[in-house]
Image: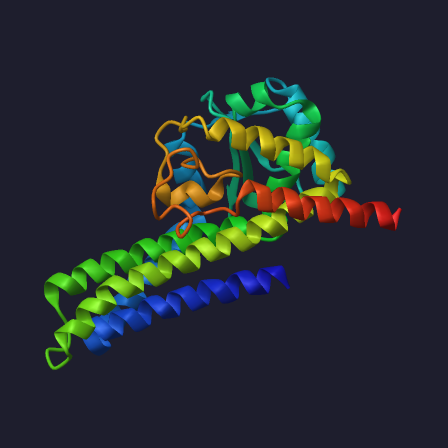
Length: 282
């Protein structure tokens, strides 16, 4: 079911892109948009994970050089019924983590050195379980595709602004579309990310059986983020992938509208509800 929902969202975003191409250039615009969307979906599906890992200088590790981290991930994957993902450590003091890859067999989890230094073992388990939940529900795939399509719509909008489209269309409407459609794509991307963060938090609580581990980790990560430190080469197009927004400490007036994650307070509150549910079920 989760896989079906993921592909449904991918198709929906692609159709949005093609429709927008038609608004700009009619049938020719739709054809060009389709070809661009197909190419970008292909790239996002097969190569987006390698790109983001390389962007953050992630270093692959295994049981021989990161035995503690490897043991945690192996234990949690067994509980979650997942194959062992590839593990990476990002050489950066800012604590954060993300998962990437296109499916269970081609998944990767990356954590920063700062996260390993800041959190205790139980809190690290909470974070890793969160990332494994993203993998289990194919969030890593839809996140990559949503970011790619949103960027493509913005590119197509700029193209339409300079090269126009149907000359009989009211130019005010055309200009409005140039502004509204990239905004709509961005909001779709953000809403997908924020709703799935809640689900990944819930999944982590169920995998570990201890929602308080993730609650504690999120509180520490949020407190650190408020200092304004940003992971090296942080890119807004990949912000939604991290367990906490890497730009959380550098907010703006529009920060709430374009926040890629729910607030930490909201996430902790929901985990508190799950904690009571789990206690009641025991």
